[in-house]
Image 1 (tube, rainbow, N blue to C red):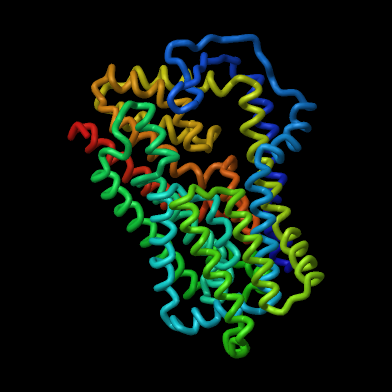
Image 2: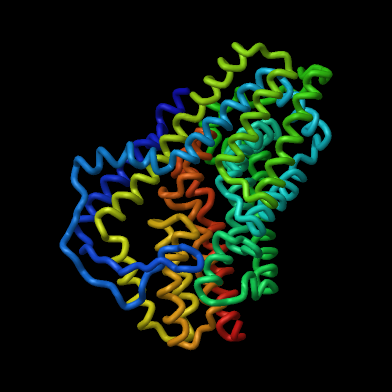
Length: 464
């Protein structure tokens, strides 16, 4: 613990408060401006009107608006925040039955000595869920499970977060039938839904292969040299209670078998619900709440004990919930100061000055930067694509390539920017500082960006 005190990192909430203060300062530096917006009669989406930007009187944030933005940010992110509470409560109840530990122990015993095999299997599953269905925040449910697996397997908490969210980011970058990003952007661009799939399938496979290779390399390195990992001292201090003593786990009981069956069936229903019935946070929360209640009952917990365990699980999710709310607060401050459209206008003006051969790569960089302040893929499409479509038409870039640049630009900064609430929540669950995550991720981020630029350069030359 003395080593922790010596290297005590910036508290994640303090990091986000600094980001909020920076947003307030930016509102005094960047002029206020606004685009006109119209509602698309077919989709009901609010779209930016190209060429309608005008500067307006400054509306900078104040100290009072900074203070009120915290509660308003929590309200804005309430759906995912309460989703986190349900996840924490469900796992706490199931952990109270002992079934989760026994189940994970059985899995780890099955692959003992070859635990690394779990990494590509899980990453392919998470990557496909993002590439085909647009799953991302839903994966927060798997963070506690993956943390237990990685700590017991001799990896670290950075590996646990990476298995889930690096794979999900690769899936978003190579979106195949992701209706939130590709579907929305192609609809705005007037392209057939999910057209040009061949290029995106290839892109997804390349990004996924790169990502799996990187996480595998890191995990195997850390297993041999645990003290060299960025999360070592934090895992030793905070995550040793996640370690499953494989030799001390008793044989599974009939009740625990029933609990794991309930959990497995519930997860199947959740996956089918997302794919077939359009389940999102509210519906998934209902499924996970049912898993916790039924699992606790068949596991032999009394109603009072289930309530106590549920509240314990919620306490574990308070920090992740606050991080999500503060991320929403930062975006809200920029939006209310009317500087977001000014940033968008300036970037679009810069893009228009680029030669046509560099336009697609410039669009990718533009979306990477803009994604920091508008992390929502569908919202970003509604704001930026109405400007990117005429810009691509004027500069000889195909609309399909413009969509590809948006799709790639919407992906990577989701897990490196402090406004990405989901990654902050995952790191908070694992008690890993954001700075350690950045240091772990930046080499892969650079490789992702180079890969994207190569694909975009090829798409521009080939007339994709």
